[in-house]
Image 1: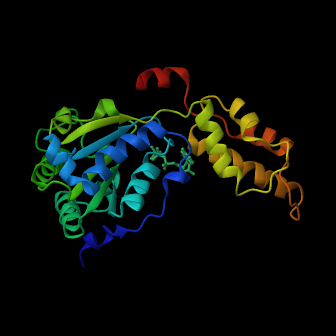
Image 2 (image 1 turned 90 degrees about the horizontal axis):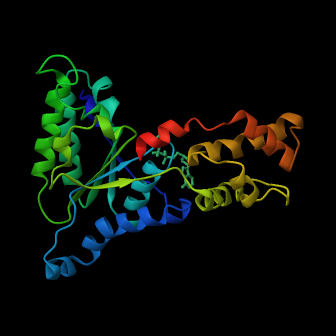
Length: 272
Ligand code: ATP
């Protein structure tokens, strides 16, 4: 039995409104993917084509995956997700075939989005690993072939994400491949407020727990860490009393000591 069956179509249910802030990135992706689908004649009229591939990069946990899913949900596109490292571990000896299979499925399900998470695992700069014809090089070659083979105006959009833009082979960034590159930064204060609002809405919090207060205390936290803070605070309340119905400021103060930002200033410099 082929392991390839594991490359499954997904039906993501992430809405733009589930993603706090990042308005600029949402807009750019709508322009790049939704507009050509909804108004193909406008693109023809202007003599421009839509990008074939979009690469998002930035620190971990800052909504790259959510953005790709929301794009599929909100544009009514089928969604295929592949994690870069999985292609090597799950499909040992068959990684190239797995790449072909992903694209075949995406074409069959078009209009669709292929989302390559951690694409750096698939597209490490050639020559950076030992040997010249190793598996990684062949997988990258296959990926380039498939991307170049995606025809048509709006059928298959390729979206990829990485935390390591420096590792990516430059061949992927040529025109007609990943021709849009978007930086997805750590949330700034106003974005943190939006993210806290979204996550606090699900938790019975005391009235003195506000998104503004928490955003002030979470400089350098990623969206994923903000979500973890909310989870910890709720757990902390239950730990005190399993029948608790409220999460207070002091629970959040404890949670903020448990969940601290992984990123530091030098890493932030790295992305800029
Ligand atoms: P990685 O680079 O580690 O794959 P990512 O950038 O793809 O991370 P996501 O997987 O999209 O990040 O986000 C992780 C989790 O963090 C989400 O499931 C969500 O709970 C929370 N999160 C991150 N950013 C936001 C945001 N802007 N609004 C709401 N929730 C967010």
